[in-house]
Image (cartoon, rainbow, N blue to C red; front, side, top):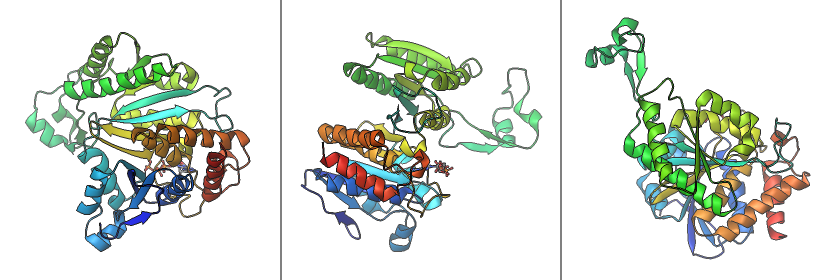
Length: 370
Ligand code: ATP
């Protein structure tokens, strides 16, 4: 691969492609790579060109060689997307690769800042459907929709043409798509149950208003759960669901929701457990996965060396587990937990004074000393 930099690893058994993206992305990914290398994990890390620099060097934000490297790698770690060039990167990783779901753990580590009075024991996962619903956008002019579907009416009989000039967005729920993501969520709930979690799937929709689309999603999910007799099932409408994530977060195990609701609820849930700086994620499809923080490029703090790299480090832990390096993943998560318990080297979002790099070094030390 031309122009790809390899960071010295400690063995050649796994290859990781690390793409920083933009804003705080490269800062948190650099620190995360340092942690993996210092921990002598059996990974070789490759950092191929992408985003703005790749447009200059290769004429594309996601050059074919970078795509090939990602497809061949054992793990892909992404920092954060912002403007068009890095949005194009995430667009390839997520939409073009057709990921089924984004899996977003919500876990409180004692010592992490939470606005809740009692965040202890928060430990659940939100599974966000990734390629249907209202994302990626399918939008157009109302006049075109009125021409194509002149008889389309809302519940009170108003036709599209009655609104005058405007725009529309299409929400898609396919039976196959809902089934795929429901199976992924159920498999995850089973895996967690084996580790002592309750084995419960909570589905969140707005099926009382969107009876056809959200109604189909709810119906399909409920049907899939029936084939997992070890799991219990509940459903909430998204307004009630949002309230419950704040009021009863400890009652959650695996929460399954559609794209737009998941986008909002995962930020909300992330805050209850310590903030966006601590929220990791993994995006999965049969035969493909990549890992990234829930947060974006955070332009307000980019370039200042103060971003919290926990979300990226925990995303790397998810990646390590996915690559078959569960012991390293567990040890890395335990190292992060230790740094929060100690509480002396936390970043500004957690009320501390440590820089991104200092936090990373503290994790390295905690990893070494286990
Ligand atoms: P996007 O639209 O891509 O989600 P954004 O800038 O609107 O990007 P985020 O990047 O997710 O939103 O960040 C929202 C705010 O949360 C930031 O302005 C920043 O203050 C804070 N934040 C996000 N990530 C971190 C982090 N890793 N460490 C510290 N603060 C963070």
